[in-house]
Amino acid sequence: MGDRAAAEGNGWRLRLRAGARILGAGILIAPDRALTSAHALEGTDGELTVDYVDYRGSVEPSRARPLPGRVLPRGREPADGDVALLSLDPPRAGVRPAPLRRIPRYTGARVLVGGFPEKGDEGLWVRARVDGPYGAWWQLTPEDPAMVLEAGFSGAGVAGAQLDEVSPEPRPEVLGMVVSRFHDDEQQVPRFEKRHGHMIPLDRIAELLPEVGRLVDGPAPRDAALSAVVPASPGTRADAGLAAQLAGWAAGSGPPVLVATAPEGSAYDLAFTTVVDRVGIALDAAGSTAGDLADALGERLRWPEPYGSAFTAWLRGSGPRPALRDSGRRLDLPVVVAVAGVDKSAEPAESAAALDVLVRLVELRVRLVVVLREPGAALLEAAERRVECPALRAYTHDLVREVVALERGQPIPRVANTRRAALAAHDCARHPVTDLRELAGRLRADIARLEGP
Image (cartoon, rainbow, N blue to C red):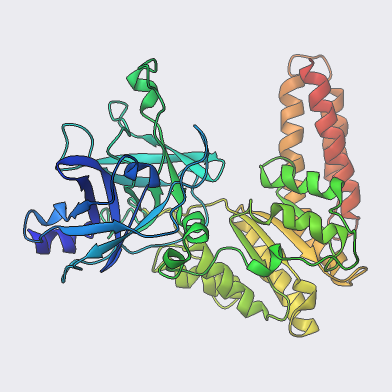
């Protein structure tokens, strides 16, 4: 049974207890280290035990001791923190630690959670969906309405489930950890309302516990240098207008592609840093080749194999775009992506080639912001025309359709006809993209007016 647990990839799941009292779950991340939720340790004196339950008694328990540096949850709904690292004594041979893996996008991901709820001391697996962010956490909702992520799931690993639908049961990779609990001392919250839970993703865990960060596989989704900006002159503050525009873009409003110029250390650059932590992927392309950019995107997008290599080759321009219609596989897109410094590539020709990579990336329906570093860069017009304009045309077309729907039933759909004609007359190759931006702005105003108060 132990061999079977290891082969199926869930032998890293631990049950955490103090004496006979079940505290919750844990994740084996190294032979002598386990990760759990800090609040699961409340009320204990440090005398803990972890059970390797999926080995059905073939692996003896280990003693566990909390290590310094745990981060307790702050307040009743902190939406951050709640992590602790345990030292295991003795380490158990033959027990494989969890594969820890970053992913670029959590919303909509299907996951598997194994915890130890009341009357389920031997463990219960729950399939769930990641609904969206909650501060630094993400909300989890079980697929089965009867399931509840209650006490006993604290510290449980959140593993990718059926990321590759051709092979229905891949070895699960841990993406985060269950952290939340309901504060319901007077039992006022109905059980059904407690079914949701929250997880803290590996990226945040790695920030809070650097020892865990060294064990996480996959490249960091965001280049650290992009958020460590030094102002070019004392007193420089982030440009409020650009910061607001970027915040709305990162949240999903407005056109899918933006192109901006932000010299390093400028007010615009500081505005850009305000959104870096809100995107799935943020890359600094300065000094890179177009091939480097394609490879970096391919690594971070984590397409399922064998399509991962094929898609990266396509981004590089060295192969056809793979067809997925009949494969049964799916891509976790759209992703929010920021790329800075393509105008400071290794060579001038590489900057133009980097735009080719971004053109293909936009075809995958990602939300993309392109940040150029040189004011008046010759690449600006090309970036606007080739990368931004086609995506802006599609976005504007969708706005026209909204106006058509709002004017339906009127004798003459005057607004829709006028805006449709203006869109048809615009040519990305001949006309400035500013004209199209203004048209999109007028359409948004039209929609607000037609919808009324």
